[in-house]
Image (tube, rainbow, N blue to C red; front, side):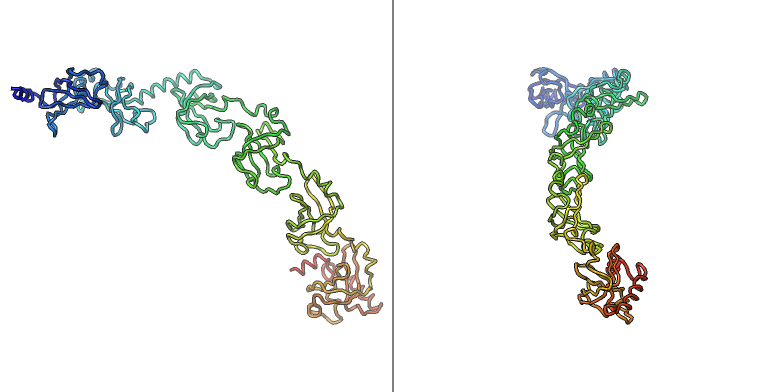
Length: 548
């Protein structure tokens, strides 16, 4: 009889209808409901707002989707029964543009399912002003929504939360623009961070906080100071009510560190800071937020020859320095590191007085002279004109090479320019100062050929004084090439036929060595008439031509 009654009840059950069911068990993830069929049905717990509101033995209306599934159990839905019952009620109450409250049930492709009595679709683009990346955070939450579209045939409703938010923001934006003034400090939330700044949500209105208005100090990116979602106090800097734009400032909420800069960092004061930037000409040191000083490369060491700051400093280094100067209007501070130590050049005048005999190593050679290291960081310079009394030196390499150790005399000291002038020739007397006591016109002298040129030969006489035998003074016969008759190192005898004290030149004649007085007088007269730069050239020009 029981089986017969059950079969009779089963025959009355129709798919697609709302029927009565009895709750027989409440589980954590599902509810067991008896509809009087062959077996009980299972309804997911997610279809109920709160399982605590249900009781075993309670009758509820459910929607019968299938009498039997593959396992012979009925497929039931409490939610669809509610929606079927509510659809007509919802249609009567809702119309496009109206505001409804709903609970987010689930995430689906393209958006969310929202229960407003019936299931409605909320597209992802209409969830918020900016489409969120994580939709799971909205599931189970309750919000107000605006009805965008109702399709009666498909029983489909489309909602928007974004439009409500935008309407609210528009209202709040107008209120904000009406009441705020430049200089006001307001609260805001960091909405978005870009390379050039950050957009701050002022409860309905976005304001731009430019990177230059974030800190009095140096920052390379806004993310160094702000985080998305962070609440901050900002100052209203500028308002454009027509375009509804607001410019904001963060650093303006703090005092400008440059206002009292002269009292905080007087000239000569010792300061500590961190290296924040290196440039070819120096290093920038941050001594407090918003205050940076420049240590020029010339102010890094008294003695070391620093060509670029990276030789001494690195970004991030903690350093000490001395304040050298302040330009408040330009917000610039000049700093020095070498001023922390005594200036060794202050003792140079004492250590290397004019006339002192010094010894050092040739550190560098230039076109005009040689730099000699007297001690670490202290160089003296021997100019080419101070290398020899008797020779015209065109380039220091003719006499010296790098690494040579030499003696010299201090000629001059300029501490302000950090220069010491040295002389090598001053180690001995100038042989030309008493040239008349050494040579006279008509003297017969002996020397060795030191250099041969196309126009003559140089003969090294006593005290390294050179004399020139012009090609016309070698032989009575016409000479085509000097090297055909003379060789370097060869010892020759010649007669002095010219002495020019101003130009420091001595003219010699080999062929006149055996002349009598009458012949010598005639030859001397001929030599005097030779053209400058032609037959008798100055020593420097002769050496230049010989080099070429």
